[in-house]
Length: 308
Ligand code: KMH
Ligand code: ZN
Image (cartoon, rainbow, N blue to C red; front, side, top):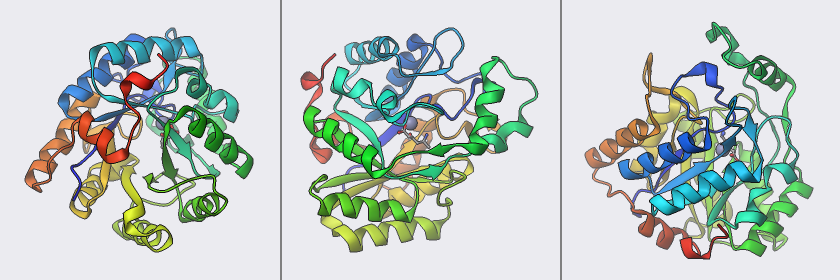
């Protein structure tokens, strides 16, 4: 089994500030939280940017520049930049940081889904910033658009920048989309997949769903042609992490996907969630990958080849 690669998803765009006071919002806070998560055992940090004044998800390259340079100057961690962006952004806006910063990795969402966040509304007593209520209500009618034209665009810019795509699979149909890209010569194995489970609009986070995705991917691509990681959105985060550690997959945790350390207890940092996975890996005797291990497992171009 490969060493366990832990990714920490630091702030995202689906978690809104009113859900937890511990969500990093400014470039400074996002970078500091990423550095701390790396010190706790994360080999990769997945990065979104937000507007410093009110935490609105941002595609502004200046916000990314501040975050990326601070992390790079203070940590060896691998940086995976989002191309998922936030509600209402075009794919070009979402992926803006890739041609500008040429990161080692970026997310690559493998198909369209309904991406609903509005079910969180009843849990919110008071909205901290004016944009949040509309943002979360809009998601009732939000299609996270990743058409084949969008996938072709992402395939082009990731290839041009030698940025390793992390393929976000939200449902089984996305594996078939990937199979099409491979057949069309737009994606070349070995591939790294991220099974995103538990989004309302995508596959659920049950054990059967995870084993099905892994088996289906093995049948389509061959077990030696891909590595995989799992995101359990919400309550499924730690349970699915445990399964992945046992099954030879990798794990992503963080406040982007889940705000709880345990039932009813908010995680106070991304590092706390990473430490929980490190402890699980220890119990299950699976060594944890360093950033150097992750670079070797995933065949990354290296920190010195990025454009920031
Ligand atoms: N927020 C996650 C459920 C991306 O940034 O490209 C999915 C995600 C997408 O991380
Ligand atoms: Zn993300």
